[in-house]
Length: 125
Image (cartoon, rainbow, N blue to C red; front, side, top):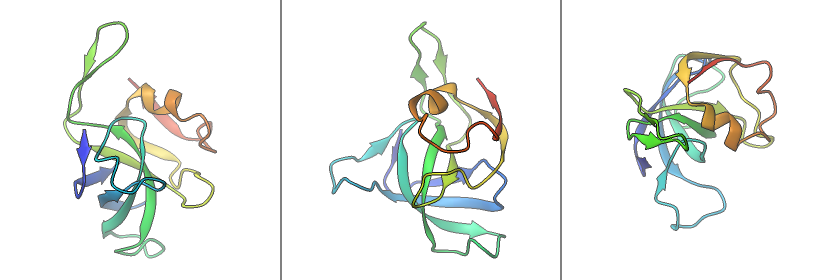
């Protein structure tokens, strides 16, 4: 579970290192926690990319959480840190084209509408 103002690691190759979660588009203050597969609004905290400076607001897809979750078959999965993929704000396309480390397969099955999943090189767990 990811709460408001949580600092998250970016796990794609956009050269953005940390983002801060601050809201969800379409909700006022109803949604207070996010899980794998949810899309949230975030601001960039640490970046070495000139095209994505600090304090820029983007959308992000949650692909890893420290909080364990259970699958339908009874497996419990948890990661060492919280991780997100950055998305473009308008058309929900992935900004990176490669993932750093494994991601949960629920992130892909819950969000098939994201544009360029096919060209993203990921290792699903």
